[in-house]
Structures are given as structure tokens and as C-alpha cells.
Image 1 (cartoon, helix red, strand yellow):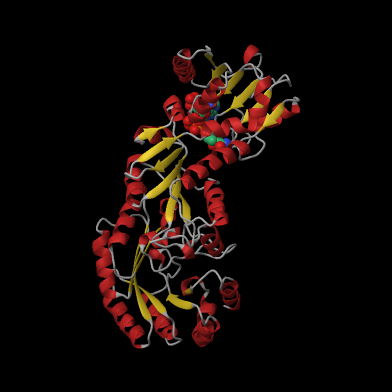
Image 2 (tube, rainbow, N blue to C red):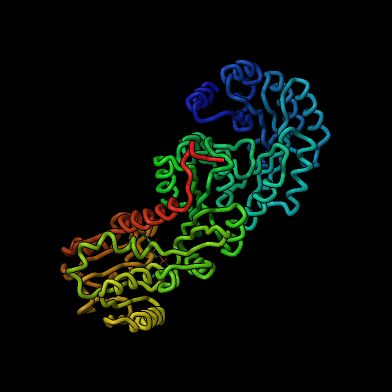
Length: 492
Ligand code: NAP
């Protein structure tokens, strides 16, 4: 317990409450706590304390009998906790209601909780109303299986006006952990760094306060997001939140895992989200859904940025094009032709950007017909322009391939070599001459297998971190050029 108290004290400036998860203590520790609980509560004075003994069926570690659990809770209650968490499912409810009334007589408030470990309940509003009849705070922890479930949780929370905490567990639930104000939640839960997470999806107190600006959120806070599937690895939340905090912009940027783009769009409109960074696999759906798009989106059919318009619709922009060119702009005068490896969304942005700079492109892809289709689209687009720049298509370069006029710059745009498959090389047999500039748009790891080979052959190499920063910087300008507010400038 001494270590736990020290941990809570170390985070005092970041937290308001401490939950004592007694189920996570060993049996001897639980026994010692029974004799020492008052001192523990006193040692934490200034922080509200929540007493919880969570059952295994609710995601906790208590696997002994219910009668033993109630006895433990009754003993500990006398120490003067601010809150007790009481599960409000029907099974054995009368005994727990008795415990709740005993708690109230001691001045301890009651959190009436339900845990749905593998789903979000259908009638979530009804469940919240029932919990509010039992406790001083209704709490639902549920596991969304997709963004539609998350949307339902947000809408139930926002329409429930009694004190509540509604949290999504697992990867789809993460936004609910850091957007307490948007949900109307009384509080949220975190786990200390370098300790076992008390529940899946917990962030640390430090990240919650300093990166996600949790404590400073208000009705005026504007929300932004990055969407993808998966999305947890994205560096965008760190980039945008750090800049929002540094510039004093009252905004929070959240990673949202999205399985279904149409459901996400409804969620984004309802919240609302003021801007969205779009990653794999939603760039094409974003391009199709945007009410207005820029030339880059039209040309590539891919949109990596959505900006909310005054009428609630979204404008689609492609900042990958500008981002792609930035790290190689100074090198372009030496390049008379380029090979683009891949024919996906990033390849479209790269090939379009190069051709717009007047550089002919050879598109090489594992699936040849996708390379053919991309080259044909680019030729149709650039064929109408004054200077006729051509695109060609081909298979991935093999051992004896001679890229000829297209050898000056080789751009790697496939996902091969990206973490965790760091040994992957999309063109393992191609032999670099040493004269090529090789640009891999992957940024994790900073040196991919193909870049390592190219460097060893004497090629000049460029990785994807410059592109990431440049496309994110362009997004940040778009996010903050719409009527953004800085903290302390909230007007009326
Ligand atoms: P995408 O649309 O899914 O395209 C993936 C491409 O990779 C396709 O051409 C696919 O070929 C090819 N591919 C996949 N597995 C392959 C394999 N085993 N062997 C050979 N080719 C393979 O993805 P994307 O949006 O273009 O993104 C691709 C990469 O670019 C990702 O790693 C992403 O992180 C990175 N990216 C970086 C930045 C940045 O800021 N640095 C920005 C955007 C994207 P098929 O057509 O044959 O399937």
C-alpha cells in the first residue's frame, strides 16, 4: 500500500480522485488494508477516494465469494471513502443495495456501475436511467465493437443529464477515455505509467493532462481526430496536440479507430469534429463523402484531410501531395524521370505530385492492373495540359530491371517494410546502381530494409518523416485557419 500511496501522491498535480482497486491487492495486502484503511484515506486527503472490489466477470480480479466481498467492503467503508462502486446488475442486487444505503449513512456516495465486457448494450439510455435511480453517479463501462457503438455511447451520455461516467473499453473506446467533457462525464480513469493498466485503453495521467488537455476542456473546446484502422500507432495525436498546447489553442485531437466510414461521418457531424486526418483505409471514402474538394483530391481520388464547413458538411483536402514534395523539392531539378513503387493512395499522391512538377513517372506495382489504371488516369489528367507529361506502368522491378529514364528517383510507397514487418522489402531483387535517389515514404522505422540496401549501394536516401511532418503541418494550418479560439479568448 505504501508504494500505491506514493504513486498517487506523485501524480497529485494531475489527478482529482484515486480509485482503490482492492481486488488487485494480494490477500495478505487486503487483510492489512482492513486494519489500516483509515490511515490510507488520510494519507490521500485532498484527493477523493473510490472504494472498488471488482469481480472477474466485470474485468476485475476478485474471484472469491460474494459474501466475502461484501464483508470486505463493509469493513473498509468505515474508513470514510468519498465513493463506493457498487455493481447494479440484477444478480444479487438486494444485498448490494443494502451496502449502498449503509455507505450513504457514512457519507460515502455511490457509483452504480455496469460492465459490458464484450458489447455495448442496446438500450443504453434506459440502462443509464436505471443506474441513476440506484446511485449518485451512473457508470457504464462497455466494449464498442465498431465506431457505430462508440457513437451510440456518446449520444446516450450526452442526452443523460444526471451525473454519469460512460467509458468505452478496448481500441474502439479510446476517445471516450480522453473526451470526458464531450460526454458530460464526471471523471475518467487513468493508470500510472509503468504499472499494470487497471482496464484496457487507459492512458496515463500525464498524457491525459498534458497531451489531451483533459482538465482544461470546456463547452468551447473544439475536437479534431485522426481516423484509420488500425490507428493506435499514429503519431498525429502527439503532433497536433503538442502544437495546440504550445499555441494555446483550445482544441483536442483524438485517435478514432474506424471500421465503417459512413458511421464515422454521422459521429463526426454529431460531435462535431472540426477537422479530421484520414489514414488507411478511408482516404477514398473521405474523398467521396466530402461536399467540396480541392484539386488534389479530385486528381488522386484520395483525401487525407476533412475540414468542417459552417453548414456542417466537410471540405476535402489532400495535404499528402504538398507533404510528399517538401523533403525532395531541392533535389527535383536533378530528376528527369521517377519510378513510383506501389499504386495505392500514397502512390497516387506521389505520382500526381511528380507529374505536376513536370516529371514523367513509371508506376510499378505488384498488381499490374492497378499500376495500369493509375498510369491511364494520370495520362488522361495531364494529357489535357500544355506540356505533355506521360506516365507508364510496369511490374515491380526485378534483378536485371533497367529503369532507364525513370531511374533518377525511386519512390517507395507500399506498406512493405513498415513496423512491425521491418525486414520487408518490396523490391528485394532490384540492384541499385548507386546513382538513384531513393525515397521511402515510410517513417517507422526511420531506415527501412530497402533504404538500408540503397544506402549501402551509395544511393542518396530520404525517409518518410519529412513527408509526415510537412503533411501534418499543412493540416495544422487548415485546422487553425478556420475560426479557432485560443484559451482565454472565448468571447460570448
Ligand atoms: P494502400 O492504398 O493500401 O496501398 C498499398 C500499396 O502497397 C499497394 O500498391 C499494394 O499493392 C502494395 N503492397 C501491399 N503489400 C505488398 C506486398 N507484400 N508486396 C508488394 N506490394 C505490396 O496504402 P497507402 O495509403 O498508399 O499507404 C502506403 C504506405 O505509405 C503506408 O505504409 C503508409 O504509412 C505510408 N504513408 C506515409 C505517409 C507519410 O506522411 N510519410 C503518408 C501517407 C502514407 P497491390 O495493389 O498489389 O495490393
